[in-house]
Amino acid sequence: MSPYTRSITLSAVLFFVLPNIGINQSTYQLADSEKAAVEVTGTSTLHGWKAVAGKFGFESGSLELNAEATTIEDFYFYVEVASLDGGRGSAMNNKIKGAFNADVNPKIEYRQSEPATVSEVKSDQTFTIISKGSLTMAGESRDIELTLTGEKTDAGLKISTLKEMKMSDFNIEPPSAMFGQIVCGDDIKVMISLSYDVVTE
Image (cartoon, rainbow, N blue to C red):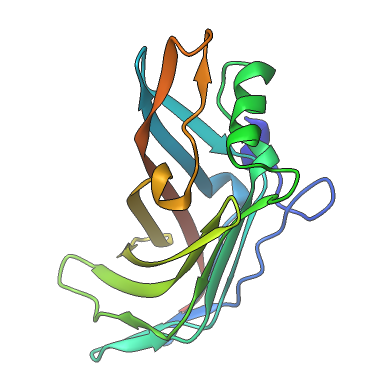
């Protein structure tokens, strides 16, 4: 089991603070942290790369899905920059922290600015959440829109999103290595996935 999936508390482990979610009289609760993940992927002049977050958290208002569209009043998530692991040792991880100026801006944060819309559950058991808010990276904030895809399963719910963006939009200089011979591309993708277990039906 990898370290980033084992813990979610503010000291040694980082904890998800999410209320139960009700759908058609069923109650769902955030699953074990092993089923949650936050990743950032990108390219470079040499190869693609992936950085996995070890410490992150989410806070959300209650969610109900039924025949009519509904809303989520509040949604917030953050990632501790120092916990991003590029999988190639401390040299790469230090470059990630340097690019984000992590000593001054220790977190990547998204805060919803208005209630998110939630679609009805389709026949294939999927639904969509549209969330608008402010994303802050390296001290720069930008308004963005997130489209999250949800799916009802026998065990509960799965919710995920993949957001494409550019580092330059946040005035982040792409990290480089080997005296500038290897340079990361400007485009990155942020992936978030959560799971919920059914509690009552």
